[in-house]
Length: 227
Image 1 (tube, helix red, strand yellow):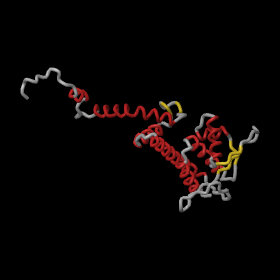
Image 2 (spheres, one colour):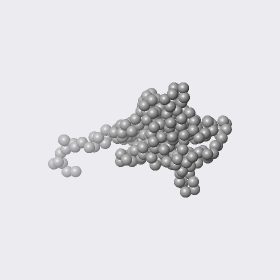
Image 3 (cartoon, one colour):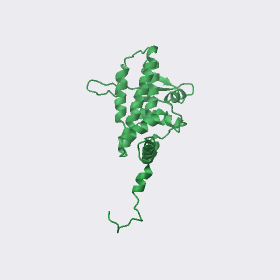
Image 4 (tube, helix red, strand yellow):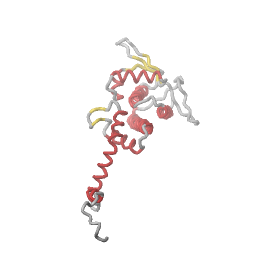
């Protein structure tokens, strides 16, 4: 199993699947990491608390919904366990890109690729980058659907990506679509504020009240005096 081709394949599929949100993607990445650490077995046991920590999912209901969605949508095969002494099991289907950029869905995993521990940090960086690319694509598609400029979508993504997807740098965002709609509503006001600030920092710029004054009609104008 070539894990680079697998990741290329699954991220290509992510970009086409509008059902996914960032929680689905981060959970899949966490599952892939565990699959990697276990040397790509046909199936492996999982621990909910561990996966929630790795995927940065804070809600049990969100976790259960996302893992069931991924199983229903054929990204994984999830076999829940009701035995507290025996964890649930997961099988990851193989995605791979070929020369024609086609992917094999539900392809049985027969080969194993061993990844040395010295490469784990390098892989983690790649996973973070790939997850960011997938998030940005989802956001661009959402702004396009709402008929809002692509530039604002990129501003939104860069802003919240830079502060770790938190509101006010404190609380984790639970509904990024709602946050995006708030951004759209506030964008005109924010852009006006930025323009005003840029004029303040420009020593050669005329004050805003200069333009405002020129818009007023002189009520004391004498029309009997030649121009």
